[in-house]
Image (tube, rainbow, N blue to C red; front, side):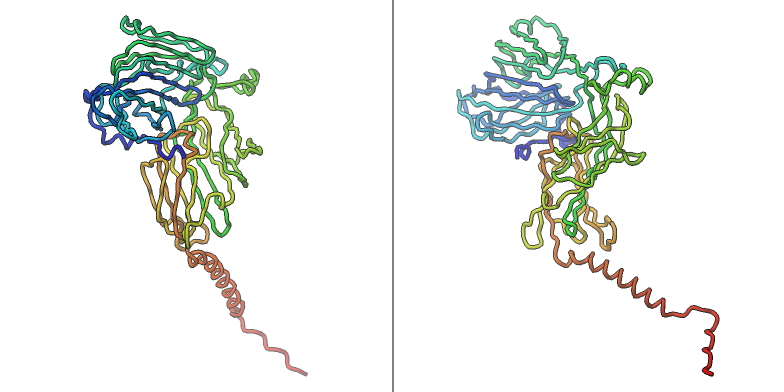
Length: 474
């Protein structure tokens, strides 16, 4: 799985980062070709940089420093580095030293690169909190404009020549730049297309050059954000099923309304048939062969949902969600346990569950993934494709007819995006024959005790008056 080798950068990973320094990587590389693609299609930013690097030093080198702005590193959700040829993933870590507002990712190449030799690598990363509405308040019929601030020239740790900067997913884009005679001499050409902007240049760009650029573009879609997601997974061996329940605290980072909301005006404008920056419907991924689906909120059951044959769940909140509005809801379903569980040995089982299912095109601030193992099961190992910030094991989670309690395992994640739905968590646990019989015997004992008690009570005479003597035979 591709995401297994991804470096997921979360807040706790930065606790050991040193204070800002003036670190400059050894100038032993040159970027001979630098192609940067920025995708602004979703509610977060996804970038891919493909760079050809040449060893200009006198010794073989194996470590390359990839530069990024510090504010991007602080909001990183995913970053991966792979060879452009062969797609082999290579290790990458956040370097503790910085240079002003520029940080570095230290890339370890598979083998040292000889002097005057070249290699092409591809860096893919996703970060959040960098798309903001151009106007804080608008009316729901107005066009929704979004602002993205970035840099136009390559921000690299080494000298760079021959570069492209491609921005995708921008409708009716306008740019705002900082004029500079030094940068104007770079022969940077811009090609404005329908939904993208392509910059090309062939001049030499010095290391750590930063040329800011601001893009304002039309986006008549919401910017959904889940502040908290509680994703519970209940495992039942006796029922051969697994049940999922997800509780969402949802918000929208788009523009707020500049006046009160009128549902009559909303219907007169036929906004249900137009793209809008308000959240009017949600598509959630469930499980194959999902059954017993439900959708509730704080008021009660919500009937505005549909489950087509594709297995996804389409729900409609009770009201449109504009910028600054919030909506809490719960969805749940059940499916066959065999889809997620495998036997690893005698009384040993391995469960494989995705970190996320839920919403598409969404960022998550906090995710709590909880597993409720069968009563009597003993957890032996947890492996996650996405590094978690905290693991909590609770052995006293009681449910119906429990005596000992379920083993509850909770993994806490921070700053993740919907693309991590392909990342899995592996749980290994032991569940022996005696533990399997615990609940059936317990239920049988309760029933036997109740029936026996009823039988005994029927034989006890609690009457106060003595029984009447039976009539003598005449």
